[in-house]
Length: 300
Image (cartoon, rainbow, N blue to C red; front, side, top):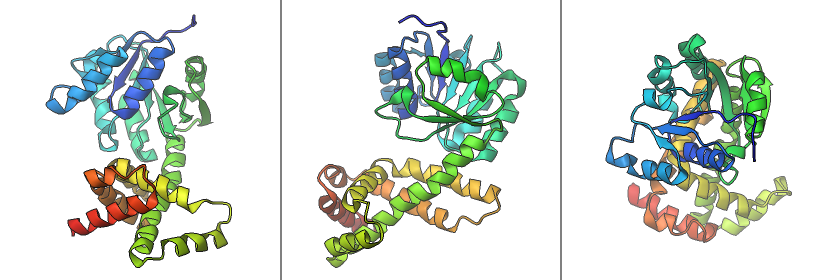
């Protein structure tokens, strides 16, 4: 497939999201991809580097090396590191590349990052609004900021799925972070509700009673999905919810429910590492809840 544009793409942060997008872009015909992750120099980065070699990206030896001569930077780091990631490349940028900030952070954090980069890069506020697998680089995105319209044709040419939601940096982040209040909050409530029901011996009765209020929802499937997501990604989801809390504070709201969700998600992230729990994640809610209940008791 011949493309009009074959940009040079750089990744800052090469965890699950970075790897997924990079592999999709490689298969879409983008050959010049480089990546840097602060874990590369330490033993914990060996798996990330192995993934990069398998995908076929150039493994950089620094953030500065990764962005040399680049056209497009994708920042995919942990929420707490998003500003520092931009700072690590700011002095090394040339040619005014696009900078796609796909990190799950508050609007204020996105605006701070855009200000830090200034005229050195064309900053784009990006929100990933669905699981990164299986669609990888085709996962639906919301983009915002003064350069959102400008980059849209290039991203669409790369088969990326996106909606421009505004010309103001932080608008996409606001949608993502406020949406997460509900999504991750329901996950935490699901755990509390169904774990209590299982311990009380009324799991089927509680599940059936929820149909009275939400007749269109399959609460068994919802419980299984939400429990698996928390067990597999609870710590990352907790970090994202801390950014949701920051978002609410930026808009003058006290994030009482969000703060509680942070605690429940983080706890479940730890419990989810238990091998007994992990072994049940495809075995249905009863097995999952039994394993989670035992692991939770062992922690206290």
